[in-house]
Amino acid sequence: MRRLFYPGELTPEIRITGGDAHHLARVMRAQLGAVHVVAGTDGRAARMTVTAVARDAVTLRLDSYVEDDAPARAEVILVQALLKGEKTDFVVQKAVELGAAALHPIVTEHVVVRYDAKKAAAKTARWQKIADEAAKQCGRLLLMHVAPVGSIDSILGDAEIFGGVDTTVIFCYEGERMQSMRAVLRTVTSARVVLIVGAEGGFSPAEAARLTAAGAQPVSLGHLILRAETAAIAALTVVQYELGNLDV
Image 1 (cartoon, rainbow, N blue to C red):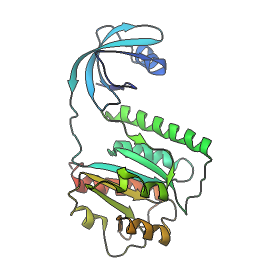
Image 2 (tube, rainbow, N blue to C red):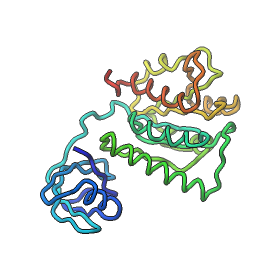
Image 3 (cartoon, one colour):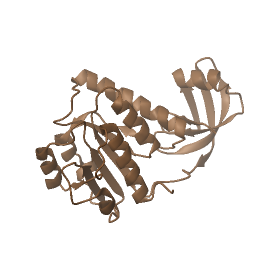
Image 4 (cartoon, rainbow, N blue to C red):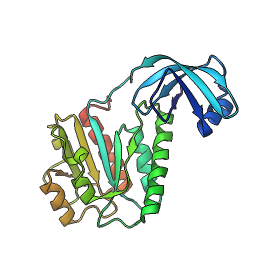
């Protein structure tokens, strides 16, 4: 059963409008009495029955709440430096599929693309839309939040990333030779893991020093040379596997 997303908290009766209503009524051929699983922004999902279909709106009645089939054993947040072209789009989509709870795009010293405030806001909105669509396609109950474009400074001051007492922060660093990601993750008991991945060229020594001083642990992905977007997906996959969020 395809999951729908409602841009608000679920109530006994909801009214879906705009493009989502058109998709539901015209593409999915919603009919009176049809039952759909609907997820709200509060992280809850419910079975809901279609009670009215109009040209620009579909009304549904809440029947019963449903639980996520596979809740994450640890929450994972991805902090990703901006990549060239549409590579960030790709990382956003795959991060959703791999179960990341949130993605924080940041500008670092080696980032090539630069956005003014207006363009950065537009990009954030685009990435959130990509994330929402990916969540629909892979059946996630919880949407992945895409934060506004930030920087090393902003994440160092972000309580969600560096302020949590039950949070482990790691960052992929090509200059790290001693500590593998696998070794670090196998000691993690935290409820939240933050993974920080650089752009093409990785992090500068100064950035690595600042992250380390703030409590982040530098980790190596091994001897293979990976493209930036490949490194992000590979690292996130390893994190989810070692945390037990990928039962393979």
